Amino acid sequence: MKLFDEKNFPTPHLHIGVHPSTSLDNKTLIEHKRLKQFAKKNEKKKMLDTIIHNETGVTVNADFDIIKNGWVGIKDGVIEQVGVKPADDPFPKAKESINARQGIIMPGLINTHTHLPMTLFRGLADDLPLLVWLNDYIFPSEGQYINPDSVKMGAG
Image (cartoon, rainbow, N blue to C red; front, top):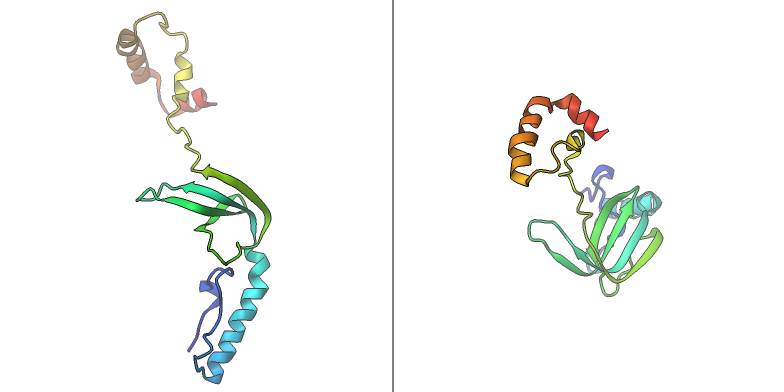
């Protein structure tokens, strides 16, 4: 019975143990000891850079869950773990710990609708009513001049 392999090893903050009433054969006990040694050896490798705790997390998952008394673990600039603080368990190890003081942690809301290529049309008939400006000047100019090269120029 193989309990784990190194490619599919669970995160080291999970408790690894065998219930005292469990009877294991010698081969399984050796495998269990190997698992615990592997966890200890790889703990530093899995150590987070930063953990932000004592926060309310706003997610963008399918259910838009709100995580009360949550924490976020960051490694190499990437969110690695998100969770709820268990009553008696410590947080995963991290180089830096930030207490959010019951603040909100949420996605960055990055604006990807920026109109950067429109910088090429600055000053084009600016003094006109919006619909005249759009229909008679901007839309025809976009149709004539906007292409991958002009978008790159406008965004640069």
